Amino acid sequence: MAKLYLVPTPIGNLEDITLRAIRILKEVRLILAEDTRTTSVLLNRYEIKTPVIPYHQHNEHHVTPQIVDRIANGEDIAIVTDAGTPGISDPGFLLVRACVAQGVAVECLPGATAFVPALVNSGIPCNSFCFEGFLPPKKGRNKKMEELKAETRTMIFYESPYRLIKALEQFSEAFGADRKASVSRELSKMHEETARGTLAELVEHFKSKTIKGEIVIIVAGKED
Image 1 (spheres, rainbow, N blue to C red):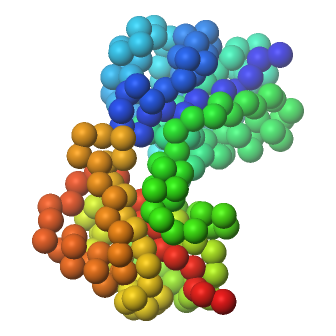
Image 2 (image 1 turned 45 degrees about the vertical axis):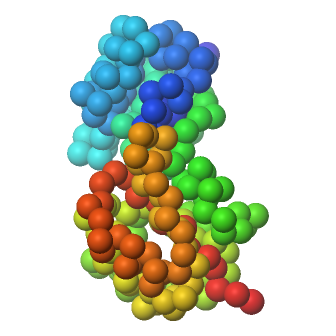
């Protein structure tokens, strides 16, 4: 039976890919890529010649039925995103849901996800946590922050480098300036950094820096 394979890709260092992921990408009939230019760098590194087509937030509603039909008719297809595991704050969910609804087999390979190393490396409890991903940029953001004030689990957020300081200031206002947190950026890359401290300390730390790279913010939950 043909399958949809969700294949995690490195979040920075191209060596962080499994042997199985490389094999699957070579064996499938087609690869769906969030950005074909980004994916081509990885495919060229491992001499993967499989055809690639774009699959992203701007075309996924249109393309999904066609992809499900192709898998149902016997073609193995893989989906990758620019970095990390498809479906985690990246395209993939709509396709998985459509496959499940049509009885098409889906398999997700284990692999890179940015929030796991950021969480474990934060020094903040990781036995219980909630993943919030990207908060709404405008509409609904304040409401979500109000809801999270009572959250006792460790909270995980993704953020743009251009909004990092503003986000930390908003967290400080909502959760208290002395709430413990950490910020990880450029994970697995040469200039990887994890900064730890209170939200107020992190605001000051990053105000004096040029901020680049994908950002993971870990915020301690409210103490019982």
